[in-house]
Length: 303
Ligand SMILES: C[S@@+](CC[C@H](N)C(=O)[O-])C[C@H]1O[C@@H](n2cnc3c(N)ncnc32)[C@H](O)[C@@H]1O
Image (spheres, rainbow, N blue to C red):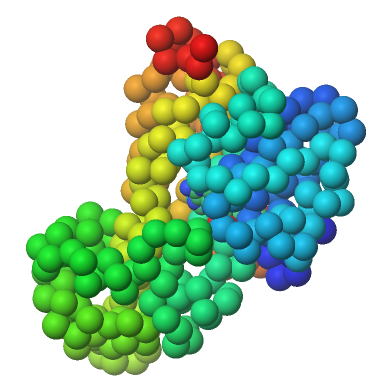
């Protein structure tokens, strides 16, 4: 069992694409609450290995992936590391090449549902948003450090928010330090279209929250580094499976698989069934892509 309340997204589809068999080595780059991780551990059996990464210390606790790692201590190794350190992390635990690598790029329920993490504007909390709470700059500090133009670029590029300039100007003026303060500042900047729509539509701060979260956690750079590391992590013909939650991520995965000439296992991205979307609203924007990393470039391989 993974943490209570967390439902792994597209679990059956992910398992079919990972296609783990007893004795294999799987890398789960996003251990989170341990939902996918537990299923991989069952499939590789006692002779296999799962190396699980998560940069968030919260994922390492006993009610999350930490508990799954303890339950399958004979085969699961849980490491606190970012995607960008995946090769180093594997060296440290003595793994040369894996059969499959999986990444579930969303924010975990553990992060969203704990108000003090500052990922959600449903409750008021310090404006933090760091996945790795032990290092780096919080969202409030990022807003303070960037100048208005840089902040507008972040909101436009990472949030696809067309009113980014107006929002950046207001954020620099109001310098919010809480999630409620950020949500109010965005409403001060652009109004609240939900009033006219009688409550319908997304909160006007949704895209700004997404943009700041991506910037605070360097999410797109981290994803690029993970995709670049695939040939040094996987055996030739190994499987890369990525579950993404917005178009900026999905586009990167699609283009990288294509430009490297990998054999696609999903011609189009797979999406959750209607039943899963009803059961688990967080699955709604999921897109699943997989490829065989079967083009070997000796120059880029680890020695
Ligand atoms: C959607 S959750 C994973 C949920 C998990 N598959 C499950 O079933 O419980 C994503 C997790 O990946 C972690 N994460 C995101 N980006 C990361 C990165 N660049 N390096 C390491 N961990 C990352 C987050 O901290 C979060 O715990």
